[in-house]
Image (cartoon, rainbow, N blue to C red; front, side, top):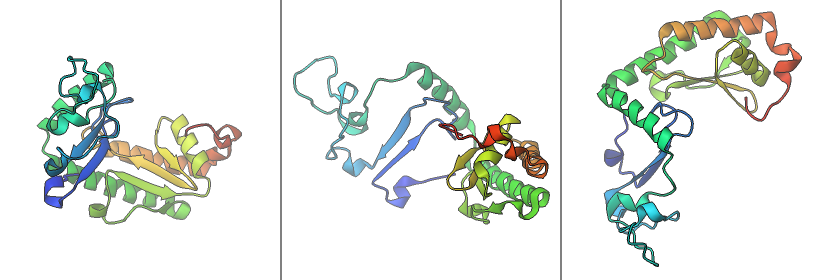
Length: 207
């Protein structure tokens, strides 16, 4: 969704590149530091990349000017390449249109799930689309097993304790038919009691 950190008066912000920036697993994180703080805030993870002269190999650390001083770690080249390609596409998109599709897509999904599943699941995300990001969460007493059963059907969502099913919608490429098919898959899992199978109830390290 559109975010204007300057207008909001934000001091700092952090985020990940792997979800809605479509960078894929291992994509670098990003950091925003308001210009008024950049010359005085001390980066606790200072390192070679944030040095004013990284190839001087000086014994003492001297931070680079501006935002560059906050660079740290070793760049994962393959992950950065994927993120760079994703950003090329994202920067061509009108973010207002992306947000509009996000709201319509998630609203459609909420309606589809409630139509197909009735009161078997309960919406826990805000109902007003303006109060949601590109994600919708429902609760179910056997949420973990339900999500495992969905994943086995090729519908990859997420689970959060104690009972929350999370569904993410990347508006750039997720279609309305994808949302409909996900709602139908959820209804089929619940109506067939597929989630009651032992392999779906067994807890793994991740969903």
